[in-house]
Structures are given as C-alpha cells and as structure tokens.
Image (cartoon, rainbow, N blue to C red; front, side, top):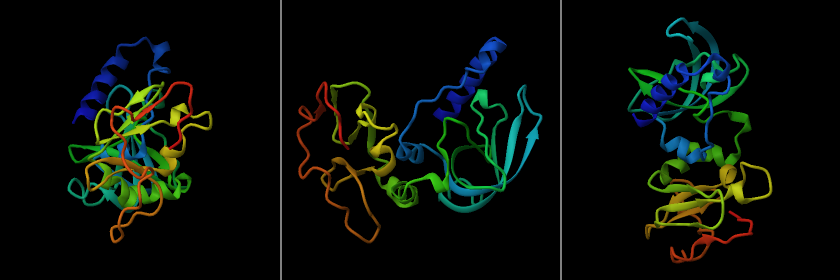
Length: 231
C-alpha cells in the first residue's frame, strides 16, 4: 500500500511539472533483487504476447497480455496473471516490454485485482539474470524477507541491527551493480543474525556456511574509509 501511495503522489507531482520537465521526471533508486522480491505483491516469469494502449487518464495506460510461465510470489493475490498494467509514458516511469521475444522476470503491485508495474520495479529479461538471481527468486530471497539490506554509499558504514546486511557494491571500483546484487542473498541464521550468502541453497539442504565464521560485534562491523568493500 505504501508503494502504491508513493506512486500516486509521484504521478500528482509529475502532473504539476512543466511539459519540458516531464522527460526528466522518472528517477528510481536501484534496489537489491531481494528487496524487490520481498516488497512486491506479485513476482512472475512470463512472456509478453500482446499489448494495447488504454485511453484512461491524461497519459494513458499500456496493458500487456502475458503468458505466465511461473509464479514465485502472489498466490494469495491472483491465481494466474493474464495482464500487466503500466503507465504508457516511459518518462512517467512506465515500463516497456518487447512482444513475443523474451521471457521476463516481472514484479509488481496488485490494486483492484490488477497487476501494476513500472521502471522502479524490478523487471528484467530472464536470460539476463544470473544463476544466483534465478535461484533467489525461486526460493532463496523469500528466506531473507525478515532481513534488511542496508545500502552503503560512502564509508564508514555501520550495521545497527543483527537483522541487517551491509550492501557495499557502490564502494567497489568495478562495475555497478556488483557481486552482492548479482550473486548474493541476505539470509537469517538460526542465531538470528542476517548474513550474505552465495551458492546453492535449497529447502532440503542446510544453509551454507556464512561468509565470516562468526558475526563480529555491531560496533566494529563497519567499512573503513579509503577502502574497497568486498562481498
């Protein structure tokens, strides 16, 4: 509901902008795929098979017809997704899907029985996801929804709770998004600490060993200045 209210408020703010500023209206902060999963009502893998522009509202709505391949989240909301709705204009955070070309991982919110998505949601071609991300959406991310991924933009960064994982991709000099975004999930241990994990994690197997053998005290778990963080 919070995301939906934010979307409505954002749209109202956009309508108040001069026309020459609308093209620059959409701006989204990158979120970790696990957060995208946990904060979405619906997560599916689907192929877009059609689209239709609906003349509702000042900018219109694009309705995409999809062939659902698999649902990862949202069974309690909708049994089977047939249509995805988004703002027709990309400058207003509407998302564009290619028809009859790719399978997509699509996340969204449900309102009045309809699935809505946009540029600020996680929508990606399935073939471009890493193996770890595919496994994450399949089951692993759900196991970490009680954890909080805390982004670190500038050092030093501190963890303030045992339920946090420090996201340090932005501190790396390599490509962004980095390894934590593409290969890691933040999973809660039996003792209650949340830790970054990489590798296979299935329902029938025990969680792999954490990246560090023992969690360090919160007061010392930080990223020092002038250093590059490693996941």
